[in-house]
Length: 136
Image 1 (cartoon, helix red, strand yellow):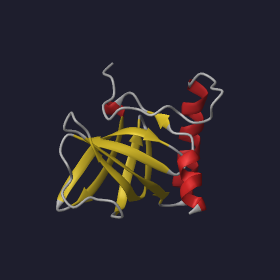
Image 2: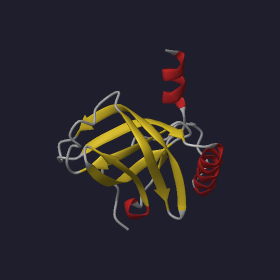
Image 3: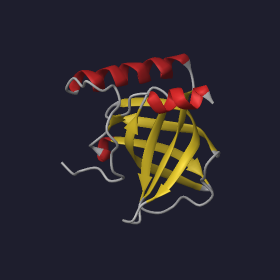
Image 4: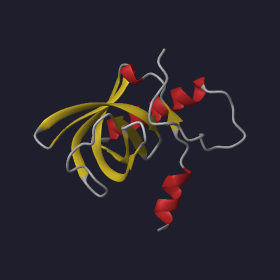
């Protein structure tokens, strides 16, 4: 149980340019490329306009690729929550397990870069974001 609490306290970094931030994986006989909503040191969340059949709490996605701008990070995702929204989108959140040490280092660098671009906050936790990101 303490590890769950620790994960919930990780600072989440919202991503507002979905065309440049996505997660890609094969699941259910289909390839998926879905916009990322946010990332943290231990996890990610992404949104769909349709529910991914069979993808639910506890399901593990093997060989996923997280892409943010030019940064590509490989790993596995363990789905921890599936939240349908009134606008017919579905928000998925999960724990991200980098495939190799080099992927972990890229993730750390990515988060440091995102943090450096954000204004300083008194509270270390990011505000919740909606399932849809604003267009630019």
